Image (cartoon, rainbow, N blue to C red; front, side):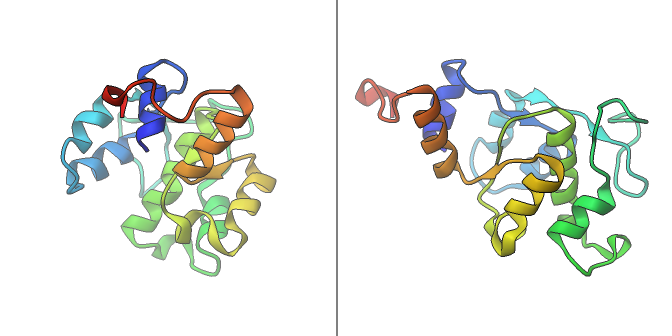
Length: 158
């Protein structure tokens, strides 16, 4: 993630944070995780009954072609009725809905089991246009596409 963070500081990429990310980050054991997330641009979540927080979600069809909670949940957790999803799994769905609503380019995650494996990545892109990559894949893709250097210019940049 260090390369992506450096590119963010250089203004090359932008990180988004939904309400859900901020809540999860506050509980995360990594030092400075919440402080880092505070520097991310806010990304609204759609209002989903039983999942959203009043006053922190948008109501209605603000964004064109926004996938629905049930549709995304069926890709991430096939065969599990959406009303029975554990909170963490429902949060994963909400992360993707926030990402899609913001028309973001790449959803970067280390959650291979929940977002990538078993053909999930391909289904998310095919059905909803959501591109999912690990941090390493995103670095390779952006470096190749834009010619951005992966190595820091000086030891202080690492």
